Amino acid sequence: MWLSDSLEMVRRNLLHIRRTPELLLDVTLSPIMFVLLFNYVFGGAINVPGSYVNFMMAGIFVQTIAFAGVYTAVLLANDLKNGMIDRFRSLPMAQSAVITGRTFTDVLRGMLAIGVMWVVGLLVGFRPDGGGLAALGAIGLMLLFGYALSWLGVAMGVVVRTPEALQGIMFATVFPLTFASSAFVPTETMPDWLQIFAANQPMTLVVNATRSLLIDGTGGPDLMPALLWTAGILVVAFPLAVWLYAKRVV
Amino acid sequence: MPDRPTIFAEGLFKSFGDTHALRGVGLDVAEGTILALLGPNGAGKTTAVRILATLLRPDAGRAEVAGVDVLREPARARTRMGLAGQYAALDEVLTGRENLEMIARLFRLDRATARRRAAELLERFDLVDAADRVTRTYSGGMRRRLDLAGALVATPPVLFLDEPTTGLDPRSRLSMWDMIGELARGGTTVLMTTQYLEEADRLAHDIVVIDHGQVIARGTAAELKQRSGGERLEVVVSDAACLPQAAAALSALAGTEARVEPDQRRVTVPVTSHGGLLTRAVRELDGRGVELDDIGFRRPTLDEVFLALTGRPAEESDSSGVDAPAGVRS
Image (cartoon, rainbow over all chains, first blue to last red; front, side, top):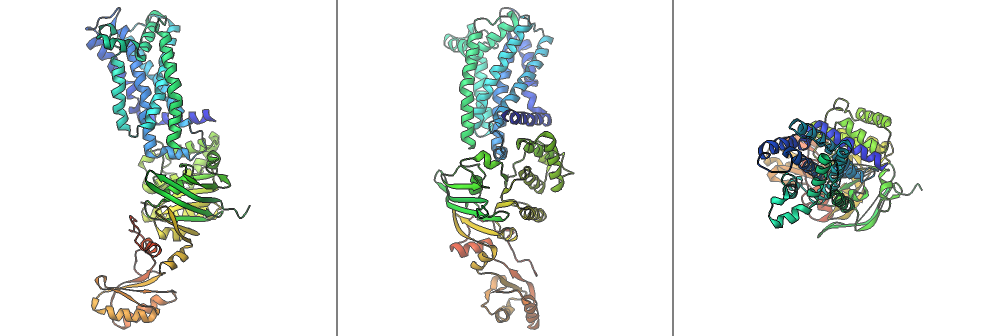
């Protein structure tokens, strides 16, 4: 019941995407831009062990997934604003399907994003030599991290009322988190106070574990902390989002 | 239990901060009848409907729909009701057909049945040509029809309509009225809100007037109009000099005292029965050489009902389009 309702909501979200392909720009065009810009503009100036394209791909993957996850907030806020949620609430459906449908759709968007970036990366010299199994592990880790963030997105979407305000909040939080991390540069070059933050925040840990899986074929020392952070975010954000949603709409 | 009302509410209270939206509203609707909740903007009509439709929890009170306690078993109550709102909550990006199929699927109909049901409703609400267009391109009337169709997907015994015709053009309004009337004749119990006495008059078996969150009157349309002074015959003369003559003639015909408004060149007399009065009035005035710009029966407007019920005009009420005198009416 809950599952079939959630899938029906996924179907609705996919119809939206088909009618408004711009909804996919954040998981197609912008990551391609990032791959090209970072590789050709910053690539020559940043010193990392190994090739820069191999270094930065994990960063761009995780950044894109993080943005895509939080983006769910905007779409949910729209539904709340235009009365569509009232329609759903007058139906005898599983009410949580509205938000699980959203997060399921985010996973699909995340898969698309990874696929697109993978291909563009290969074209500009990305060589994930860690092996097939490790690559699957990396993709799984990224999708799980994105899924956890999309629950945070749901919570934000319910609390912040206007889609415009949400966009602002997202940029003000996700951008610093990606740039003050190991996504594009090694954290060692940052000032001490920033290093402490940058080296331990979830984005860095997930990026490091993903990078290690893709390039070396092992999770490295950061895989466990990355999984713990992801699980931690999910454990907090999931019930929080469900509670906030129920409170807002009932 | 045949005596039990299909829609029932008692002692509903709801506040939003300092605003007391409902202060003890109660109502009941018998099976297969239409009850109109009449009142100006901000009277609490929508709040009452939202509570009955499980969208809002009251601070106090009891509500029942088709024998199901709305507060205790909202999920079960939702299987018995359809809701169409004044803002017509449709998915703008989906087509009319996709909207209906989605709602049908969420009512747990299987895919084939959902498809068939959507096609039936599109046919019935005259939306076949627009079925595969996205609803963003629909006119106001089409939206309302699709919204109503959405409320009927699961053929619920109870229907809530929140201002079903507000903002519609006259033709769409008439067709909406026909559809609502037909539903009630088919046994659906309807609770609708409206700002228009004319609409309540035309559709509803019973009317509950609400203001500032309280029920201030209830009865049939005829009863309410009687309380507000009933029907009047109204005449606008071409030449203000003829006003005294016209007043005397109408007073004599109706047997009641005439009211003269010189600025509008208008004479009004309360009437109790139509019976040939209009013809006699025209003949009489013509005989006296009084030329007319307009003549007709005039029913009280919502403003006047309010004035009679509360001793003050209906605040914020939108009185445009409400029972304006429209020339000679039968």
